[in-house]
Image 1 (cartoon, helix red, strand yellow):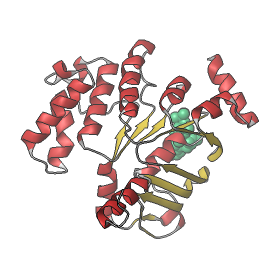
Image 2 (spheres, rainbow, N blue to C red):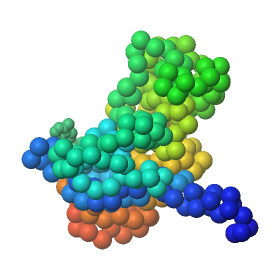
Image 3 (cartoon, rainbow, N blue to C red):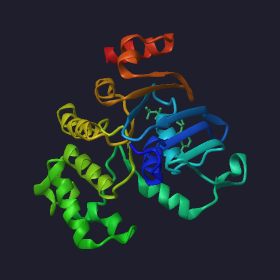
Image 4 (tube, rainbow, N blue to C red):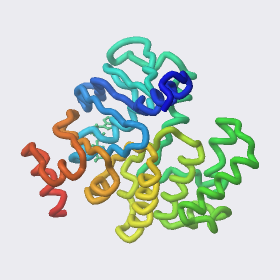
Length: 270
Ligand SMILES: Nc1ncnc2c1ncn2[C@@H]1O[C@H](COP(=O)(O)OP(=O)(O)OP(=O)(O)O)[C@@H](O)[C@H]1O
């Protein structure tokens, strides 16, 4: 690499900048403190999984990342750029609507319940936001949407309605929809939890393929095998704090905290 070339060093610097960085995040719903000072980093091309008991704050943390939820304290950085706030504490809200839009369109979310629009076909679902929100060329978006539907194995369902698809197919359509925004990262909130075990595997395969392509992903999951298989880094949350984190082999193979050991043995026993 030519260090003297400013374009080369700028590209290298940008590759090193995490897509998402959270520093000391606090979030409460009224009197309920859900996040109590959480920091995490999603480096470019890495998969970071959030695990923990029900109610530990995993989904809330994910939703705070793309500002679907407000937070009262702490920093959220997207590609090194800190979210700007106005107000403080329970009054704190993002100050810059354009920044919020930029962040949301670059951090595409996949929900547990798919959230496809029932009045649109599968192809229309995938094309809707790039065309209507990003104002991209419809013909180019359609070509990309069809390629993505083929990639997730439902190329023949483009003209079907969501209700005509199985849960696994709907979730794969939702992943294609998220990818069609050409986001910098995918935020996946328990993408397999609403599915029967045999349908989970279809979605697991797609997520593994995306991990193999080095897509940046933040994944909330109760599926420890999935977390172990796809993650570069696993974060165990307990009551709104990070109890333990590390590479999956270490975290699952040699957990250090009693709480993580208990959580893993209870989860494996299910
Ligand atoms: N909109 C809300 N209003 C009030 N309380 C909420 C809201 N959303 C979540 N909570 C509470 O915040 C806590 C954390 O919820 P969250 O969904 O983040 O947990 P989780 O770790 O993702 O749980 P699960 O694995 O069951 O999805 C829970 O006690 C939950 O009841």
